[in-house]
Amino acid sequence: MFHIVLVEPEIPPNTGNVIRLAANTGCTLHLVEPLGFSMEDKLMKRAGLDYHEYAEVRQHAGWTAFLRDAQPNPERVFAMTTHGVHTVYESLFLPGDWFVFGAESRGLPPELRDAFPPAQRLRLPMLPGQRSLNLSNAVAVTVYEAWRQNGFALPEPA
Image (cartoon, rainbow, N blue to C red; front, side, top):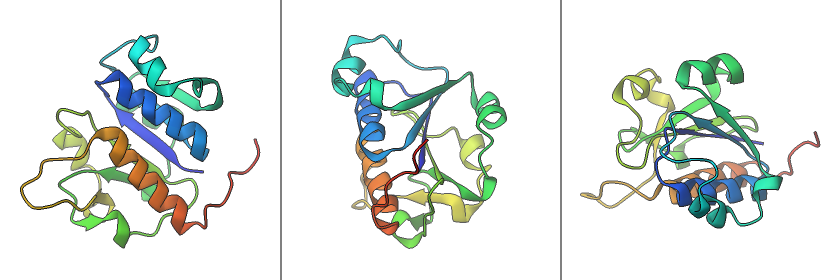
């Protein structure tokens, strides 16, 4: 299926919600450190309910470690940012694509965001003057649009 990448997430319940989403959609969740919380945080666990055991979650000790360990295809990695020119609805997604989201309070660091080609910097539509969507909501909208484009196909068995 797809890969969700959270770079330096800060709010435990958001990550818990994304764990639940990953379990229900067959996505792999990648958490890029530093995290703003412990993986044992009770709020994160409560938000993820009992879905933690059904989700594939991988932690990486920073962006460089993520690239080294996960080895994503650079042409299929998308930076989700309010600074994107194109929307997710103008993009065609394939199984195995990677969606990279930044921290709740600041988004992706500019140097990381700018490392992506403009065509791979995507945004979700919002009314003018609004700053951003909640992280877990943005992940859900993006994943479900990508999954919809692929006919809600089930992930390949492991």
